[in-house]
Structure formats: C-alpha cells, structure tokens
Image 1: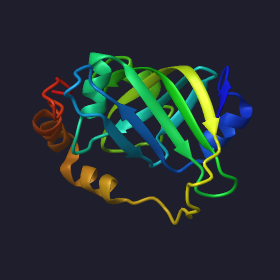
Image 2 (image 1 turned 60 degrees about the vertical axis):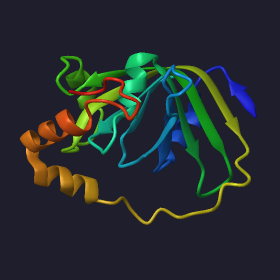
Image 3 (image 1 turned 180 degrees about the vertical axis):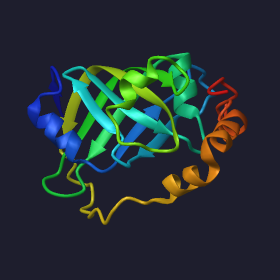
Length: 179
C-alpha cells in the first residue's frame, strides 16, 4: 500500500476511468450495520486534490445518507477490473446535499441528467491510498444498466418524492435519512 498526499493527475485519471465505485459508511453505534454500496452511471467527480463528489440516486436504501448525517465518516474505493491491477481508497469526511437544498444546484451541473437524483455526496478527502489489487478479477464493462433510469422516469418527480418519503426516511438501524 502507498499513501499519497493528494489526488494527483495519475490517480485522478485512474478514478475517472472506472465505471464502478464502492461507498462504505457505518453508524457510531457498535450494534449498527456497516454499509457498502456499489455506484455507477457516470456519477462520480473529482473536484480537486482533496475533494470529490458523487450524484446520489434514488434507491432502496438510505444508509449512506443516514451515516453521513450522523458522523460524516466515509470511504470510497475504486478497483481496476481492466488493465493493470490497482485499488484506490479515498477516506474522508462527507456531507449530504439533498435535492431540495439550495446548494444542490451548484453541484447538479457537474453531472449528466439522471431523473432519480436525490442529492450529492461531497467528500473532503483526508487520506488517499492505493494498493496492488492483484486478486481483483479481470472483467470487461459491457455497458451501463438502464433499469434505474427507466424506473425513475416511470415514477416521475412526485412518485420519486413519495418513494423517498416512505422508503428512504430512515436507515435500517432507525437513523434519520431523507424525508
């Protein structure tokens, strides 16, 4: 493993070339559930040497939102599934900017339109590392799934708001999330 002072040009190029990333968070409670969420659909942006953001899309859970609102701890991981092996981890302090927050619009223009957008996760990166990834399998990217996009379009803005109010109001541990 190698520690880096910042997200430099090489790391940025690697991160931006990945089609998939993983977000890990946890509540403060020792009895709470650690969460790892896979993300894709071109929703990740490097904002600077110590800052990143990703567009959060409506989904079945709201663990990341709840954990960030409780304690802000977050790790984002990228794995090379093609080309030379590599794993990059970004550890930091994250915050959630909801769709209805005034600040949301300043981030929205960084991303392509996704009808299911519910917020943006903004992370101040405190630790950057990469490691070998020798055991990560080689896999090819055949394309993005369009299921979430179609599901969101079919629900419409009002349907998505209702879904988030009922399904994303709290984490599985009962922490407040959306709604």
